[in-house]
Amino acid sequence: MSARSEIRLLDPLYGEIILAHPLADLLRAPVIQRLRDVRLSNIDSLVMPGISNISRYEHAIGTTYLASRIGFYNRLGREEAWVLQASAMLHDATITAFGHLVEEAFNYISEQYDHETKMSLLLQRPNTYELGGIDLQIYLGHEAGIREWAQKIFKADAEKYLVDIVNALKGEGRFGRCIAGDIDLDNLDNLVRIAFHMGLPVDRELPVRIAAEILGTDETGSTTFSEKSITLIKQWLTLRWTVYEHLMLSRDDFIGKVMLIYAIVLAYTRGELGLPEYAWTLSDRKLIEHLLQHKDSEISRTVRAWLVHDLWPLADLLWMRGEPPSFARTYGFADEATKAMGRPCFAYRIRDKRVRALKFQIESGEIIELGDTPKQWLLGVASSKRQDFSAAANRRIRQLACEFFETECIGRADERMPEALSLFE
Image (cartoon, rainbow, N blue to C red):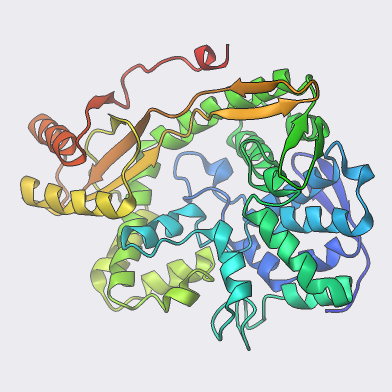
């Protein structure tokens, strides 16, 4: 990977972005170019077409830009600045196809995949199939390119700075809370970018304005914001409610997630999706191609039906109290629902992402707490049998869920829930 000139980009949120060497070189690395074919949204939305094709590549560029606008950026040394921006660019580098959705599918069968710790594991234990391994074909026959980049930029100190980058991706070290914290560059860009592409009224500069109010950080991971940031972060939290209200409660997209996860889990449990160490490297397109061409007609038929909007019946979406269960336990509930309903059922759950508890320090030393901790989660059951769920079937699923998860159902998702603004007062 030879050093090359700057890259000029035109971003939907921030306008013109100029990435100079060495960040321009890292952007060209195959592990980042793969993100052009991985969606930012966890599903190819049927009802919000604006978010269907936002890529993780676009988001990586935006997050890298925010790193350069952070309040203390100009006080950093050259190598420190590169570490911060490289960490921002790489924060999603090892994410699965369709974002967290395939990661969740892996976790249905206890694979326990976590893209935020994958980078660390790969660099510590490289093998033939993994990032850093020999002859790894991570994207279109090319190796990942991260080690080569680091060795050219940091030379003899490459391993030291790679450790700093990996620590930041895990939320550790000096920049950890900026990359993976309560309110980090990733989430600042992610939320506003999705809101913009949804078509919601949004201040496109909000992420930049909040990043500028991050005044400092230290080796312990403590991050300091300005007092001015409080009002801005409240705006961000209010926007979060609106965005996730749309993302979580779309029945069509909920069914789409169920169908895609079902197909992936079925292929994976039959050992036909690829080695666990390799499957995460598939892009969205490659994953869908694989599933459509699968010799098991149940897998290919399910994916084809989702692609043409021929959706399975979906029972009531239910708000359940407390912490969400693991995906492995949700898989167990699907088996129980199948037995109880006398029809094939598959279940999916989502933590209530509309709210988020934030805790941060401002320059006076005061600790600010905003938002709230989610107290509920969303459960849905769909079936490949083309018959709508009756009122009696919905009541039975509700009862079964309460018993199986040992909690209570708060109500249906289409019933009125608490207003967002009360959470931010």
